[in-house]
Amino acid sequence: MINLTIDGRKIEAQEDLTILQVAKQNNIDIPTLCHHDALEPYGACRLCTVEVTVGRKRRFVTACNYVVSDDIDVKTASLDVTELRRMILELLSAKCHDVEMIRTLAKSYDIDEPRFEIEDQTCILCGLCVRVCKEVIGVSAISLVGRGADARIDTPFHLSSDVCVGCGACATVCPTGMIKLNYTKDEVEIRPFNTIVKLSQCVSCGKDLASEAFVGFVSRKLGNLSELALSCIDCKRERESLALANRAHLSANE
Image (cartoon, rainbow, N blue to C red):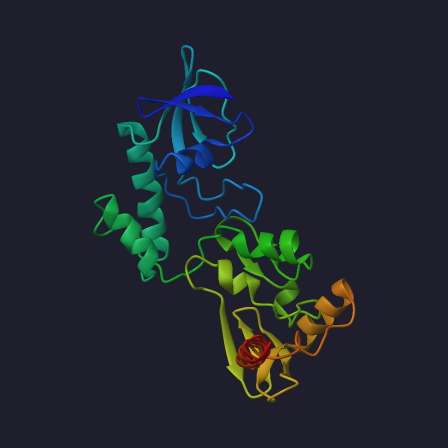
């Protein structure tokens, strides 16, 4: 265990944790947009920047990937840190002006309207979608393409990806709602990636279950799936209810 100070509080922490993890454990709020517990720290949004003093040396670091050590002094809401976050949020608010989550965060730092030119984008390039596709699903169907102001998240050449399994993980972790799953009959479209995958149906009732590619992907990982695994949540619940009722009936007759 190591000892550090966060916002004047003496804290004992496990030595391999990051500042963000220690702060969460001690109910200290540090905002972040690109962090997810299931993924490796990335430090893309810089919103979790904090002030760290070691001896006489002061630095500004991203809390999500800075590992704590003995006797560091961390300030999560100093004047300099607050001003840095305000600038980040003002830029994001201008870029993604109609994204409610960004506007709410900006208002929490007393930003009503940004000083910069207003744009109508929805992607903040946090990289969560790219990383969950690569690190968790293991497919890498999307990536960061372009440079500078032209940087964006996309499939190669903006073509329908033949490696996408239609799992929807990218849409789940997207903090701004840019990525959407549009369901139509027998298909789901992953927007804005121009990718359409066919849906499989529940073996019990015929309702849409998941993409055919995802079912095949999971089957290859886990082996042949059982009939229960290929059933929708409603049918699973119905089977569970019947099983509980049967167990209760058997117990009553013993």
